[in-house]
Image 1 (tube, rainbow, N blue to C red):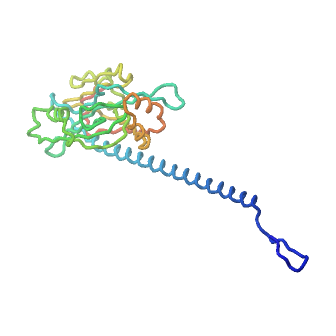
Image 2 (image 1 turned 180 degrees about the vertical axis):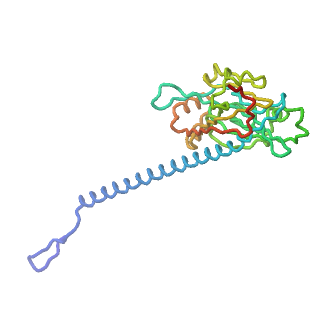
Length: 293
């Protein structure tokens, strides 16, 4: 733009050319896009951190809760009673590939039941993982952990030590189950004797007539498929292992229509599972139940 100062003399005013304006707009767009990408990445990291925090908190809370229950196991002293029971139900355990390993990991679910006593009442407490609210529901690679409890006065319990275990096995009303934890991919225990040795069929205590143990040969080699302790026998230590899937990954898994697809999806997401393990000392162990050297 030209402005005339006096006849015959002009001066060009300062301004931006079209190219300069376009370059400026491009630079501003790049900066805005960069800030948006950084914001989205920060938001994604924040959400992942919150999900992991919730997952860890849920696992820790259950581990503490289970420890408080389990360490109160009390021998019933009845030959027809069942002090402690753990069994791998009739299902196909899921396998998953571990990072930097050629050996697959086998996730195991167990049904667990044990007896405790407080004052004049016996309590039968059971834990199990299912994919629906029915006790006899199907078991897929990922399920929900439930808790069951029933009580009897010592008078009603005397001479019928299986009554609480039978109530646990036969109950099908979802109203009697408490939902404990979602996204569970592994839930099992290992029993140890008073010397801290893993109890299997072949351990010294397995010769006790009030102990029944079945080693797992097909479902999960190296593990125990069935534990049953009665009379005055209980484990001296119980080691709990529970694996929990991240909520976001669990949501994606649940969208898959079949257990086969879910297993395939889960097999490649070992990094999205938090595993909690602890060994719990049983307070009311009867030392005479274990062979002495």
